[in-house]
Amino acid sequence: MTDLNTRTTRLQRRLQSISAVAGYLKKIDQRFFWYRLAAFLGAWVLAILTRFLFSGAAWIWVLAGMFVVFLVVVHFHRRLDRQRQHYQNAQEWMTQQVARAKLDWERLPELSAQHVNPGHPFMNDLNLVGERSLLQLVDTCATRGGQERLHAWFLQPDLNYDSITQRQSW
Image 1 (cartoon, rainbow, N blue to C red):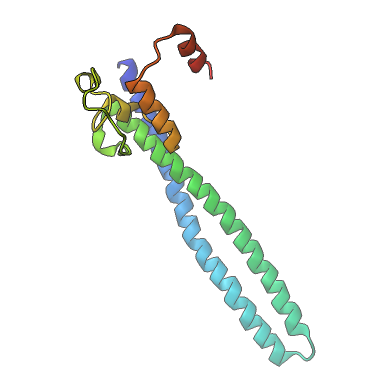
Image 2 (spheres, rainbow, N blue to C red):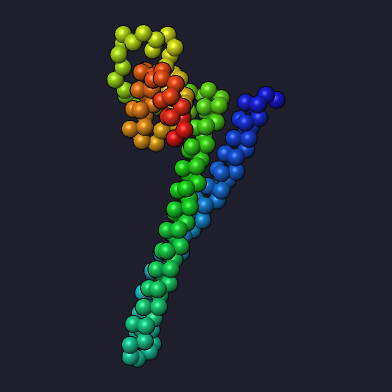
């Protein structure tokens, strides 16, 4: 196997394991909806039953206790949601990396529209920007400013050796 095939295979295995964990967390997340609903409705049912079966303010204590149970369930559900979102983001990123390794253009994210000069001397010859371009293949920027900077570096490269080495040391 070539080095690229080995890396692609590793990425795919990692993607499968991340997808499995994301699927498992999604199942648990769906169960937490029912836990929250049961805690909420249980609080009211127990409070009403306590109100009619016992005298005094015992129903208020039951309602307060069940409210605390509900808040604990909500707390753990939110933690689970953050973890699930983390794995979904990792799954999307890993899918894009596998697509980059395989040159699967349909799975790569679309580039945002950038202003290009049609008279640029080598932009079209080298397929630097646009659909199915080198920029689309290497652009993993998370922000619009980062995409614009990368776009500028592709079309207006700084050929000064010192500035290139300084930029690469960031």
